[in-house]
Length: 111
Length: 114
Image (cartoon, rainbow over all chains, first blue to last red; front, top):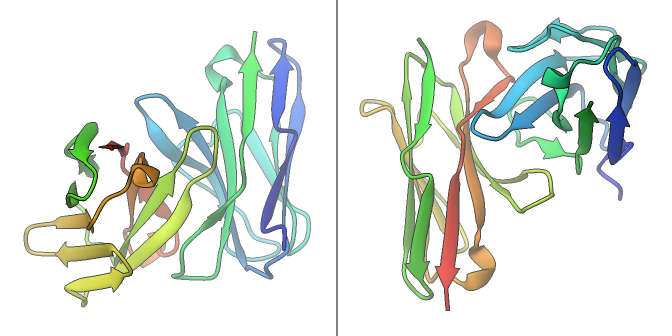
């Protein structure tokens, strides 16, 4: 029972490079989310997907794009990485009002 | 503006005592409020959910209260243990068009000393 799986766990990018963070859940949840966590800022919602085929912006969407590939997978893409995107990224999934299940995070450094 | 505040950045208590963490919010009318635990280097783990029409919820040594008049939730850990040491996050769902999307507080770091 894997829950929410995120890859990679660690990544170092140079400014301007692109990358995709992968997230998959095996709990048949409809809703999936991408958050970033920064010291002193807490968890902030980047994008979310209420169901397969739908996505919407959260609090801090600039510089990111997402794809809900199917019910299981929700990817986050950085097209041109910037140092301000250095953060820990968490993917989560949920069934409506029940608690979120989070992945273990991706620690991204942009130099 | 909307704000969630967890009043204590850090809380230190002795083993066996009750830890009480506070979460206050402004300019929200949440449908429900949740509490999570986060250990260093890990993702948050869901603990409890309480709805706007519920006053109190319990789970083993955990108790959550929700006062929509005071706009406050209290999170209690009774008979605390060193293993309870972690960061605790409150999160709320604003309801309406924000239904299902959680906004998180910055967390309280709890340290339980033996």
